[in-house]
Length: 254
Image (tube, rainbow, N blue to C red; front, side, top):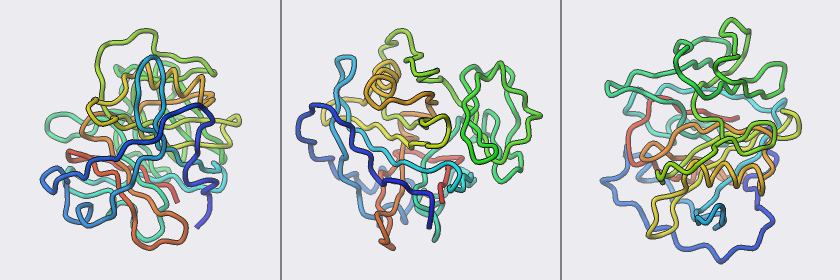
């Protein structure tokens, strides 16, 4: 078990005490294994661009971490994807109404789904133990990479928030954040505070750039797909932030 620098990164900012996260009903869980996993409590309540949300973060050394993708085929769970050796598993990637993945996905050097030339946003990839985020339009799909995931939008580009305006859409969010010139990758999950719907892309991008100090960050997906399964320390039983809907892909960090 290597590669985990800090299970939860607490952000240094003034904030109120986290609210209790309502226990999800069994009907909202995609599988029985997630239903029986322990439900994680909120990490930190933060404020950004006039919005409040609950923020979870796990930090990894890029060179010492294995990034992989598990195909859940719209019926598997994040706890199943986490397996025996995973530290964190999160939802990843877009899919169409039939569950077919959309966008470039590479795991252990194997292409799982093709590069999309029409999807804007970015491609997060690792090569030589360093993480990178390239604009989709500038990325060469022939590049030899060990891991890649194409999504949208890029939330942070070269240290600056990249979402220019608020589109009014609030939802749970999952993202990857690059720091230390690609040597550190943070896994991000943003959840609603009770009575809200979660952050906008605008607010999350501002927070990641200005308060979490990401150099680059990519939104992976939002809404009912958002979820995570993870282990704390040497605990054998994973904790889970359960998605409200089925998933095609999960990113697993070991």
